[in-house]
Length: 296
Length: 300
Image (cartoon, rainbow over all chains, first blue to last red; front, side, top):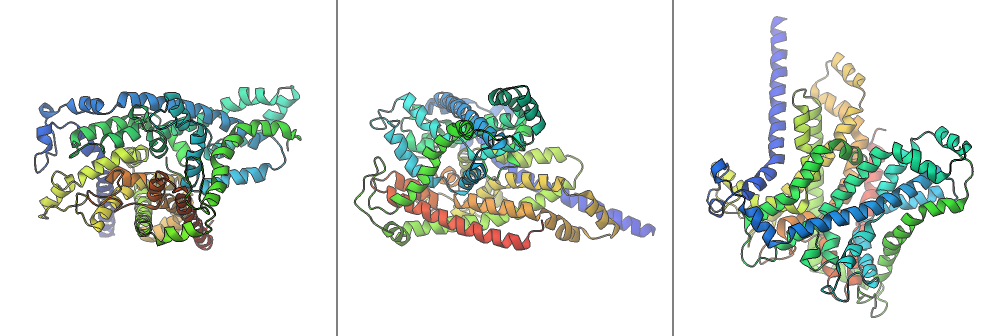
């Protein structure tokens, strides 16, 4: 009996040790790229080309020159302002269209509601590349690409980058779920008091659904920060680019080799804000993510 | 039951979203199928050189680059999705069964979710650098000579290995997140019952955890396949806009990458549309098959 107890305890400890070891190995695998990015960004040009590479920097060897150089190479400051503007405009538009549409789907009765919602949902399955070809033509027809891409004005660039993304079927679906959870009794009581639909939406539904709306805002803003494909298609001038697009372009137009420590400094400038936002607003982001099937 | 509303008012609320969706989603969808049928469509104004039927489709399928893109996309999809789903499942179950430091591990595993594919792709590219990369350094510790992963002249399988490692790394976070929220909702009774029967851990995993998580696993697998077929940004992050190694552009081009490269070429909008439609059909068929399979296998 005593022996049996011992073996089962030994087994349990062995299992725990194995478990923690394998989880730690995976955690290291996840962290390595971040570590490598930070390490490389802080290396001097001399330390960068030591072979085999230096894996740990002494505090005295850390340099911040790469960040200065990265900002000098590409208009990252300008790109960040563009990104914030685009995120703000497209998020504001998205919130307005989403709130109004979700309200109609969740609270109003109209003919064809279920069918229309089904049509909305079915577009979520379709690869975005199908839309992009025509959308490129649409923004060109609207004159948002300028006479040619060099003649494009800042205002046109902002319009081209924001308008196609001022609504999202997924967010409508997400907010409709939240709206549906608000009891009908509230609505009926408000109706008896003669409250208009819009006032009810504004005064009652939006405040209750605030957490969901905040989640949508964060996810949408992160989407602008990571946007690469569309801005890369509709923007030619480097000072109109968004951060991700600016980053990739700044380091492919280099004649000769890549300056890795500067490139990593630029990558870090783009990664860090995202990580900070994520760690601060983890719970909000998680709420949205666990319900969506689409990354980013 | 709500009272009958005036239809007009509801449509007023829907109008902003509906107008934007019509312009930027519904019309482009229908239009893609139309322009795919015309010869030499110019993207700026959709002028063309006449009706072409399925000519664009046969052209595309006969194009060696497109076939390579299909191969690249399929390899990335059929390797990265199963591997990352299985890894995520194991990590989630492991995370669920530890008590100390659970929060710390969880945060670490979620980190890749918010990262930027281009920025991290660059970091990975430097990890795989032949002379100064971390990986070759580590391989050197166990006596392996430096491998050329992605520099000029790198073989397809080496570049692909690097790309797959990056893709799997990027795909884990979201899957772990969904599996963890699924594991939270499994009734503890099942595990208590299993413990009374002193079932082995392996048995608990295969007979309780996996069946109860199966709706989640099916959902993640289907959405991951849809996402993986559209792979593009990760390749650009790692290899740059040429989507290949130095002197060998397009070595790792994907179907979506092909679509974008054709958007920029004069008179190629119809061809690009045909490629996008082909991708759409592949995704649709594949999703349909998966749904049929999961109907039989998933325990709801």
